[in-house]
Image 1: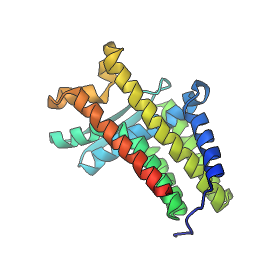
Image 2: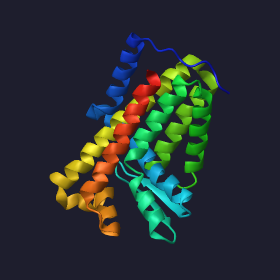
Image 3: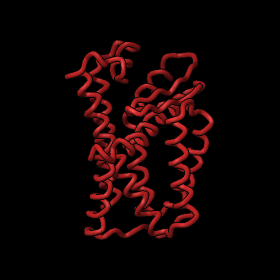
Image 4: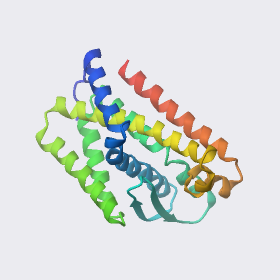
Length: 224
């Protein structure tokens, strides 16, 4: 299902960047797109849990952009890997979408994303989460059945770049929790990982930053 890689001229890329920024930077739009970014964050936890042999019991998405991915299993390693995969997940997915577009795998990316979202319905445990997942599934279905290949490619680029921008916003938020709002530390994955491992939170924050930065480098390289 490989197609010809998309050729995006600089002026088109600038327009795509502007639309992606409009989704992920202004508060008016971020209050909605941020819910999707939170969903990807929690799916990062859930997928890592499954891949390390844990059982996922449910995912919740809240209107304030917080969320929970509940899982259980034996061993500490799975808990650590699952806990560390939340904040990098939007950047990883965003970079993967850009790579798919620039290498001709748009159809595969759309199909895989749609199936993953449909399966997510089975583990969502609250109304806000269900609405976010169903809206995402509906958009994927419209792109799959009605959009041209070019529109699909541009849509994936917009969402991918918006997720990459959202990953930076999420990282800035969690750093702010550690530096300015320490009363909210229990909402930070870095703090929870510190409690489980004894490794300082700053190390986990640095790890998140390195992975997110690597995804940005990979996304730029895919375009070049």
